[in-house]
Image (cartoon, rainbow, N blue to C red):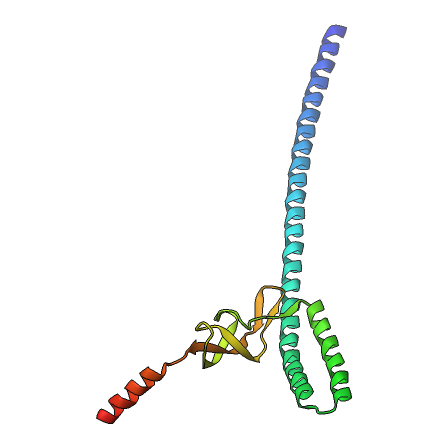
Length: 183
């Protein structure tokens, strides 16, 4: 009879062990599900932080760009003032201010677009006038208003320029006048 009682105990313990194993496996599965969920949420959060950082950088860059565009107008007026001043000492003082101003703009990634002597490029220049010249046609011969680039990428303001055009020969002018007088 003791054997039957022992077998019963072993059977009961086996059932309890099976139940405990099932519960343990259930807990393991839940743990894995929670861990995977946490990992996904963590990755989503890191991606969110990265996107937010990019948005903030773009917004601040646009704000800086907007401010710089307005400051370029002040710089233009400062340069016009320097040209119109007759007194050398005053002109030198204002020129120092201009150089400091340009240094600050450069610090924030603003650079003047160098165009004199180069071929006209519509992506960074606007033609104000075509002037007869011995230079190759469409070569920039003078700058009316300086152009500026922001961080080697965006054109803040295109340069306004005069470009060379082919000189008309005296013979072609004579032929035009002759044809006009024959009418």
